[in-house]
Image 1 (cartoon, rainbow, N blue to C red):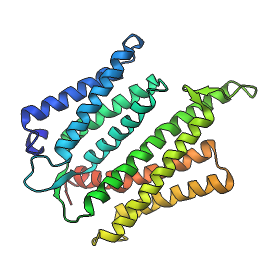
Image 2 (image 1 turned 90 degrees about the horizontal axis):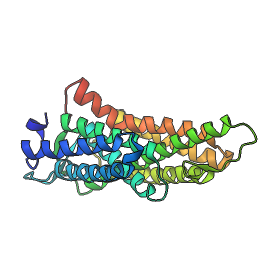
Image 3 (image 1 turned 45 degrees about the vertical axis):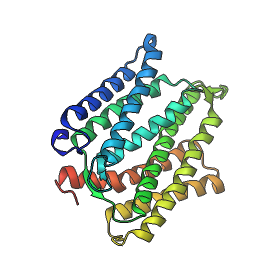
Image 4 (image 1 turned 30 degrees about the vertical axis):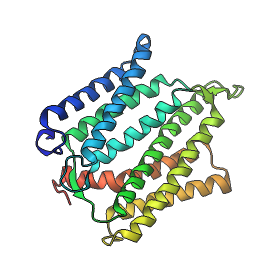
Amino acid sequence: MILSTASPALDAGGGLLLVGLALLLYLLAALPMAALRRFSVAALLGAWVLHGLLLVIDIGGVGQSEPGARLGFAPVLSMTVWLVVAVYAVESRFVPLPAVRQWLSLAGLLVVLVCAVFPGEFRPITSRLAPLHFALGVGAYGLFGAAVLHAIMLDAAERRLRSRGPGAEPGQSLGMPLLQLERLTFRFVDAGFAVLTATLVLGLVYAAHWRWDDRKAVFSLMAWAVFASLLAGRRLRGWRGRQATRWLYAGAALLLLAYVGSRFVLEVLLGRTV
């Protein structure tokens, strides 16, 4: 499908070459070989750069006759994973996380492949606020994606701590103190909630087609309510550990259904673009 539906800037040869190189580097970065750790880190960085180039060229509408962007479930999912990998790349300079690198490399490989098969549909810009609304929405996806990644690490660290018995010291978790990991997790939640709130407010302001029976709007508002409850519960009732991360996972799942899920149903299951 990439040969027939990709943007003009991604011709058959160039598009396949970029996609193939990104897939190869993501695959190499995912190899569980301790001896190749430095090479794996370099491979992930290279894959991330190529992945970003694909996003800029294809999703950014480079080569189109009018300004716009290529939208769909796969491009948004691809941008989300790219942002999460960017967060990991910064953190890995201070805390080596080889297991996380392998999982993120596999996720990157998957989304690049899916985006090549389902590149979405080019949409021209119809409002001055539309690019900002889109950027904020993807930013919220990326921040909550990073929060979910850290919450998974937090849950894994707490399980290991409990398996050591009641006398075990909290110590370090995945290279950082457990409390620091928890604070970092919910800083991403705080930031994501602020960006999601701005996205919804901007959507109400500029989207003349906003409908309360629209699945995307309903799931987005449900996700916002779950995240608001999570933050209120932490501040007022001291929610921590699994109680807090369960709310985070629930809100992230609803947010994923809001755009990626609804577009997946339209594009893949129903074969429609609008």
